[in-house]
Length: 352
Image (cartoon, rainbow, N blue to C red; front, top):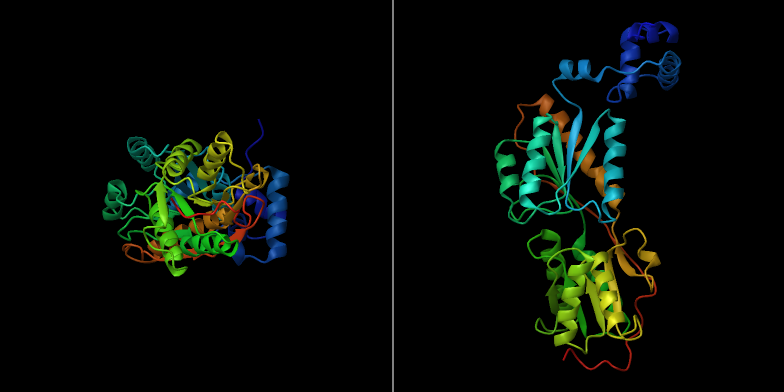
């Protein structure tokens, strides 16, 4: 059996010092090496079949170069681009993302968190935050490096990367108002998560700006960000307020549930009821009709969350490891207008 190639072998073939070869092959230090030299070193490593010994690297640096990523629902189409954004940034720095699905279950989340801690991950990116979250409060006290993604706790504990939900909802409501709608309802997300409560408040505020009273700005919360929960909430809305002419949904899955209910009741979208989603998830343009929705740059959100976590890890090496500043990064959102919204029909007659 041939001897496994070493860093010295790579350096010799590339015609550089061993330390230079090491820096060139380390994603966190490759930027310090001349680009042409780095390419030569990588070519030599590939020719020899050389791979970095990550175990030895971890022993030297006291890091595992892994990051735990807690996601609430891997079947939700918005999370694959989030995970892709995280992985692209982490991979470039020599880190590996370990994804864990929680199914929005507190016990499962705690188990996954503990398992990942046991694997000595260097930090976490968490997309599962509830407004009140005992696990995150404990992690904060223990100074576990964490960046929150999309959702946050009521009390700011960790850095947060999210979309500007307030402006996104404002764009959706303004679009419907411009089409002549006044009987607009919000089928909201669950109110125990920040996105649900933030978007509901933003809806009421946008309606208030338009001169529509708080009582007329109907909000019917769904119990989850799922198609089934969207169906139940839309049934409740239309049972009590059949004169509604437009719906702003808490997310695209809730919007899909709303579409199912409209079809079942013989209502046409958008001729009878216009519909706006939130997220612009993959295949939203293939709904029937294609969905008007607020676009959220999920890949960019994931990438920025990874960058913030790496920044946190790097700064902890250079300092005493104090608690991270709970800064917030909000990405601008925009409305993508498709075929699920139209001018209000003659059936307009108030909220009922």
